[in-house]
Image 1 (cartoon, rainbow, N blue to C red):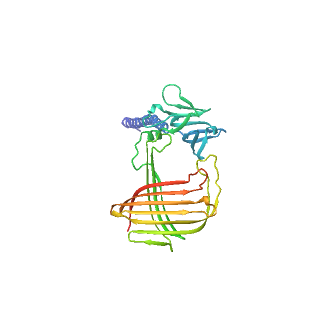
Image 2 (cartoon, helix red, strand yellow):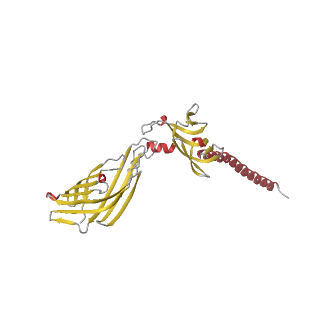
Image 3 (cartoon, rainbow, N blue to C red):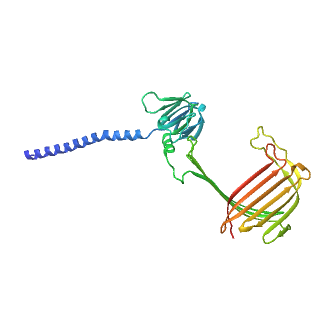
Length: 352
C-alpha cells in the first residue's frame, strides 16, 4: 500500500519526465523548419542542368559550353560533347547565366558590362531570349544575330583579368640531323624553338597584344672530295662542276585563281660554281657562293643561286653577321616570280 508521500514523489517523476519529452519535442519541431530551409537554400545555390531539345524532339541534359557564329557546343551527360548548328536544335534552356555578343559587336576591356547582354538564356523558334534580371521583359534577338554565347564567369575572367607573363604561351621545339654523302659530303645539325603568346586568347575579344619568340641554331660542314682547291693563309676558293639528270616537279602556286598546273620537266644539266672565303682586316670574314645550273635539253630552264655573307667580330667568340641570298629560276611555275631575294642579319657565336 502506497503512502501519500510515495504517491506524490511518483507524480513528480512523471511530470518531470513529461517535461523533458515536451522540451525535446519542441526542440525537434523548432529545428525541423530550419533544416528544411537550409536544404532548400543549398538546392537553390546549385543550378540544375541545361536542357537542349533536338529538332526531332529528343531532350539532352548537360551543360551549354558555348555558341560561336551559329555553331553550338553542348556537353551532354550521356552523349559527351556535341557540336550542332541552329537548324538541328529546337530549343535550349540554360540554368546558369551567359554573356551574349551580337553580330558586329566588338568587345574589349573598355566595354561596359551593361553593353553586353548577360543572363539566363532561352533559345527557340529562331530567337534567343536573355533574362538579364532587370525589370521588364527579357531581351530578345534573332539566332543569326547571336555571334557568341559565353558562360558569364568565363566572360568576366577574360575581359577583366590581367594574366601574368608566363600565361598563354604555346609553341613547339624541333631538332634535326642530316648526313649526306654524294658528290658533296655534308653534315648538318639544327635546332629551333618557336613560341607565341596572344592576350586574350579568345576569338570574341579584340586582341590586346601578341608576342612571338623564335630561336634557331645550326651547325654544319661541307666537303667535296676531288674538287680543285686554291688555299692561302687568308683566303680559300673551291671550284666545282658536274653533269646530272634532274626532274622539276611543280605544284599549284598559292593565290593563283583559278589554279593552273605547270608541266613537270625532265632536264639534263650541270652545276658549275664556287665557294670563296676570305679573312679581312679587323677579324672580319667574307663568304661567297655561286652555283649556275644550265639545262642542255631545255635551254630556257636554267637557274642560279648566289650567296654572300660578312661577319664582324663583336666580343671574343660573339660576332655580328650580314648575309644575302638570291635565287633565280628562269622558267618558274605559273604565277611565280623568277627571282627571290633574301637579306638577313644576326648574331653568331663560334664554338672552338
